[in-house]
Length: 233
Image 1 (cartoon, rainbow, N blue to C red):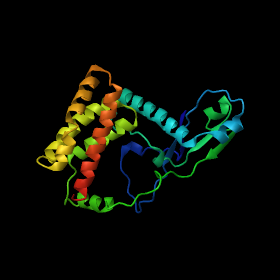
Image 2: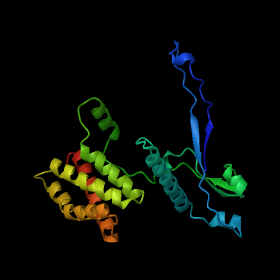
Image 3: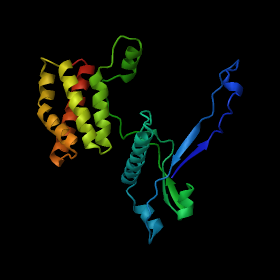
Image 4: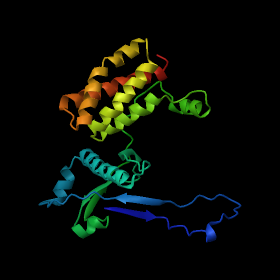
């Protein structure tokens, strides 16, 4: 169930013309609410809620929502329909209720989960803010392999091994060119044949379990290579 809440729609300007302003006040923005409903009869709703693996339930709901967003992106032919993650949610609630209640985003009983930050933050020598400034200032450039590896990771996380294989096939070639004649390039190159085989399977329409595991290893190796390069190692 999808709905839009919050800010009212702005009235269109007469004649589509611009208007003069003296200040740039923040504009109220709408909020999208997605309710993922499982049509399950519960003999003990309170007991179900108390015993629920909340992290697994949220992960499952996010996966369902992202499948819907993917379908909308394809149906609308709109490349800018973006997927979501738990970290980007303003509020996450889990509960139960009657059909009419949950259809309207209401619950018989529910819990609101704390903001999710991805778990315990590990200490790292990486400084994304500094690199962001360097990229904006033109002192560094984003290599195509970085974007391609990120897209392959997103596909793997979303359970799309075929798409991940095709992204990974191009990503590894771009990265190997960047890392040519280096030990890091040799480590990444060890995954080249497995990635090519998985991409060929994807074109034929099916990815074997072993190939999916090989893709995970390949993407992890490419992520590690890019991280070492960012750190100057």
